[in-house]
Image (tube, rainbow, N blue to C red; front, side):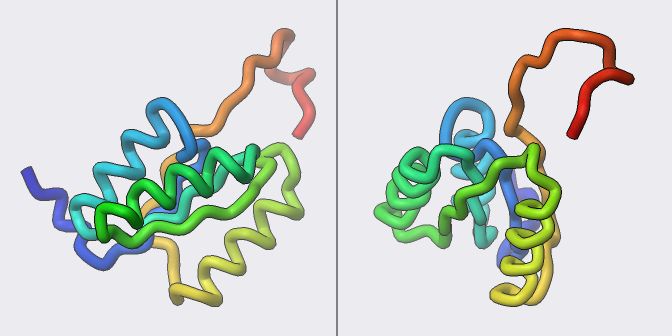
Length: 105
């Protein structure tokens, strides 16, 4: 099955493990340029290196998605380098207990 994403730029948060890593891998295998945004830099770098080892286009960036300023910086860096972001997958997450209206950034 082809998703017709050849040469699209895909940003996958939480792409260093689990579902995010599987999504990043699938996108890369379908021809996308994948940026793996990961809180733990080494995890993101390992995931990107594994894809690069298959001859695929992937890179890692360290990102704490709870930091709005960091999100803006990473986003701008990707746009500066690749010209755009075509696909965004928000797979990063943490468990935060409490009422939604009480959860801060």
